[in-house]
Image (cartoon, rainbow, N blue to C red; front, top):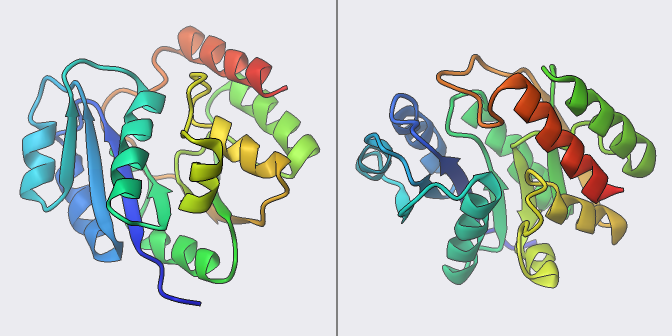
Length: 211
């Protein structure tokens, strides 16, 4: 198999405290695309100084919109595989080699599996996807996709389903999936899902869309 051209898409909203380190530790694995989603801090400047390609939204559009922008940028640059990871330091960049190795071994999607899920709604969502598709952690932000799958759907996620639309599209098509379990690092800053009640409601909505 030819060597894959990898893009690493990192959505970021007010992550100046961590984004520089994440980019520095990530960029050796491929083209690092940071989508600054309307940050009011130095996220964009810090990411660019660390070597990332930075695309900025004028206003905050949310997680799915940020990754949509990242996928569009990565695909237009000729990358044929895309890995998403978070900007908050919870995803260890050293794991990226395992994701890349799985892609080279023939996987169409590689799904991260965290050692912990902090919210009730995440457990319910995971119970459904494990039963229906064999997916243990649908809301993990560290995932890899071949761009052929993305092009087949035409977008990453237009439903606001917290990054699960493309994953479920691939699962329903019978794509070859691989899983990478890992330990979640300590987060710096506020969680991207928001407060506990709001987060659970968002996740239950995403589950409803998935069923």
